[in-house]
Amino acid sequence: MEDRKVRWGIIGTAEIATKVVAGMHDAKNAEVVAVASRALDRAQAWADEHDVPQAFGSYDELLADDSIDAVYIPVPTALRNEWIKKAARAGKHVYAEKPLADGIEEAIDVCKENGVQFMDGTMWLHSTRTRDIEKRIANGDIGDVRRVTSAFTFKAPSKEWYEGGNGRTDKSREPMGCFGDQGWYPISATMWSFGYELPERVQMNFVSKNSIDTIVACGGTLWFTSGRMATFDAGCELAHRSQLETVGDAGLIRIDDLVGGQGRSGNFAAYGERFTGSSRYILGDVDGKDTEQEVEPCDHVVKLVEKFSHIILTGELEDEWPKRSLACYQVMAALFESAELSHCKIPQPPPCWRRVAWS
Image 1 (spheres, one colour):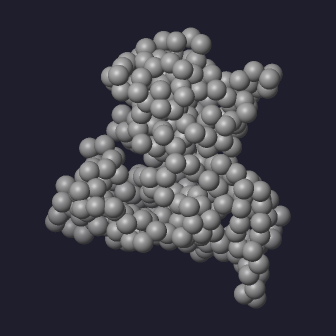
Image 2: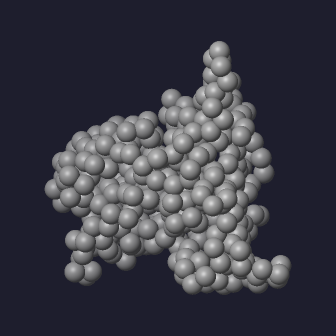
């Protein structure tokens, strides 16, 4: 079965798609056969630049092509659920960019009803380093996870960018602003560290907004049962950080290039060409001794696309991935609600935290 390749279409020509398509071309069990834009000339220019054989002048035209097995959807967050549902109803398996938006529960239900796989674009989850760390945590190398600290920040390249010139800083395109786009990484890393257990409560501790009322920086706390907790911050006001520290009662694991690259000053760039995964992380023991660990480096996108394509080729859909997506979104939504309440001018003080519960 694996000798056949999954035929992929791309819905939209967003900035991130230029990085993702490079990894898709390198996936052993996949081929990119088409791209769609709302204008045919734009789709054709993008297709020519990125070695994609066919261009469509509308998303619906691409979805009507029965030769396409799966679609990658990098359209703005505010539009994403609509196209997830349309793709699923057209029988296409769905790899959708993160973050997810209000209504994602219904969109994932449509995927299930139509027998298609759903997976979000949390690329670092598929790296060889992540697999190695998961084994260490499962083997008890750091004991029971008790604390998680994470961050994803970088400095906005210009005032125009900061004031809505980018999708991350314009809530009409990204409803949660930089919290949605950048905050997804520390929140997903926290949830991964705690095995996707939902926290008992969450609170956004600070929020910074630009002149068009969009979140550009934020930080918060998540409380879990038995005294376990996590803190995070994200946004475009500080120097680059892409960090995760997962601490247990017998040791810790530290990553300083979660999203990609080789260290804080390595090859990470918000506007770079590829998502290159790191080959290293720190394993610390209970007495404070740190040891650098090395694994095989990889391209996050290649690993994600190969995993997704393998699921399609075997016909064995994996419910784990949409469940992970929903858990992360639920926590993000509760944190965002906490932030909005703290900024509301209401007669009585808002609650300082929001409970999180499975729907």
